[in-house]
Length: 324
Image (cartoon, rainbow, N blue to C red; front, side, top):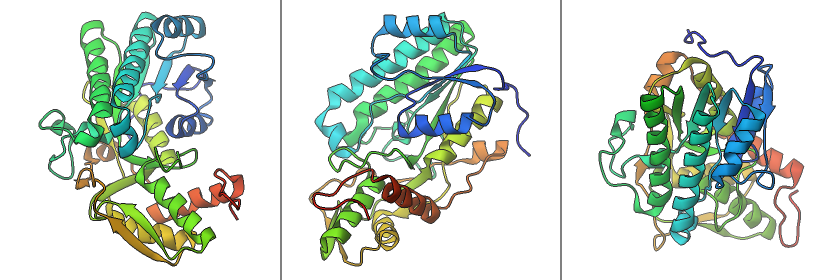
């Protein structure tokens, strides 16, 4: 049975920071069923790197709860190319929102992190206690350090000021609103685009980065949003808590599944000159599961839904064809 609700959302003013991102938009969709007032601000309306602007926004809008889903995100190439941007931007966003939440008397905040906070060689499945027990994966350490700082900020404000700030660490996410730019995207959306464009072009193969042997865990963004709302309502503790699917898949297997669902029948080639990243990253979801939450969307169904949505919305355009 689910844990008892200790923080009802009905009737509350709730700010979803980063509402246009994949996770933030999923949280907005999920909150639509909670009879609450959803507050949002676009980048043009609010620069989260500006502390005075964030303080003013919180003071004016008076949110009672915050889902902190805003972040500068990207895959291995983006992290390796723009390390200063990933570290600075995410540090500033976390610090400014956390401080403004404290100064503005926000009753509760959930900081959303990333599974890359864990050491590269962490024992699998990764438990929350593995944090800061070893070196990080070098290809995304800048982003990871900023997210670790966000967790520690929430803990510090809880310890010093008694703020009910919690943190959740989702596994690799995918879903509507994902980034399909091949230069900055994560592996799953990149593979969807590669397979689709290869099908349209009549190519005989696609190429994936690395050896194809690393294993990754994936969770649909709508499942993550449901877990975040569950935690906001039911969890109040200093330690961060994992959000995952409980299963992982080899990258070559993932590529085969995506090619099947997209309808690409060519070969899959690996490029071992490109980095693999962490060899395996599967998180333990025991704590969240013990509270009564488990995901319900399979990886196959989730990818199928994402691809169907892309085809309907024509989210990305091919050089000579639209999605069809």
